Every structure is written in structure tokens, then in C-alpha cells.
Length: 104
Image (cartoon, rainbow, N blue to C red; front, side, top):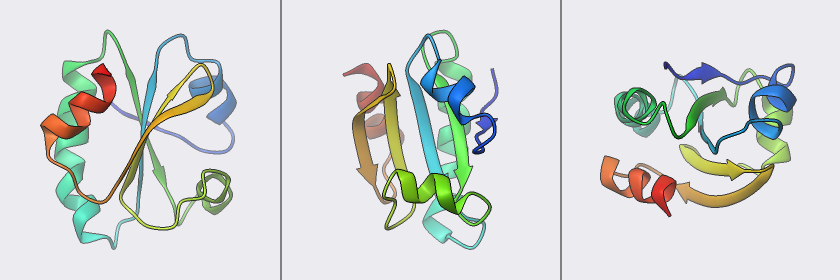
């Protein structure tokens, strides 16, 4: 399953009501490290589609959503399980570090 675009309109359904953990990538088009992270997030979305939902939030298009997560720098990756943030990572991280977030 491909990554989904998360907006304030679908956040409740896609994240809060999700029956599996949700990995959310907070990013922006002008952010270099975000662009470096994008293909890794795509790979994870494909490889872990059975166990995790992967979404992306463009902080420029969804400032309220970013603010509700207190996103101060990007990229920020969070894992939400049962409506609660259980993991958070700031800045670019290699794939294995993000996979560890999902698996823990």
C-alpha cells in the first residue's frame, strides 16, 4: 500500500481510528533532508503495508495539524498507535532507524 496524504479532514479516520500503527512523516517541499527521507518512507510504506499505515503531512499545507503535534523542525517522523504518539524522531534518519521505530 502506498503512503497516504494526511490532512485535517482525514486525520481522524486515517490516524486516530486506524486499526494498525501509523507512521507519519511531517515534511515540506523546500526541505532538503525531507526529500532525502522521502524514498525511504516510500519503501517502508510498501514493505510494511501489512503491519503499519504510512502517511505524510505537508507542514506548509497543514499548519494546524503540524502545530497539534508541536512540530518545530522537519523532517519529523512519529508513530501513532491507538491515537497516542509512541515514537518520535527528528531530522533525517537511515531506514534501519525508522524500521526500529515501527518494530519497537
